[in-house]
Length: 198
Image 1: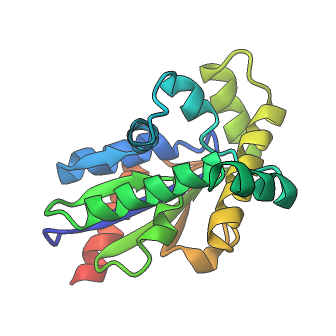
Image 2: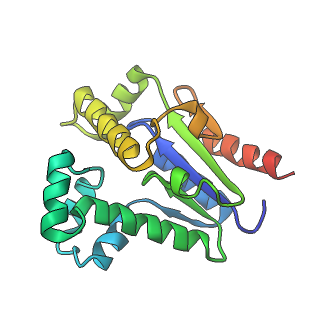
């Protein structure tokens, strides 16, 4: 694998995407960036009083055009837009460094779309599989909650990129993890990158 390689992973909730990203990063010997990007952006905007609250609302966007306009008049740029801009800046700065990295969510696939040796993946799974995964991990989380998370991610992605979340045209490869282990899915990603770089 080339010295500077960037992998971005977008995922449905409950598909195992975060674990896969961490497995890929571990195999590459590099860092995996997800919530730490949100936290860094919040700190840089002096909004670090309650990082967990910021993370919980990380996929929020201004509610509508009117609220965006009122924010622009009152404070310059809507808070959520400021967060996105700062996160994008952090992602680009990391990609301009000397090390490879794995990025999860945060529209990183779009932000790094023109960066050399960048490969994007969308991780998804069948609803029944995701229902089982979430029921084991989060006792008070219903499948409607799962759908709500995906809806937020889809809206966030559309708002900031103008593209459709989960559209195959936006990714190098889409992987259905319903019948794959974390290790197998990570290997598919690494093998794909190796093939592309040869």
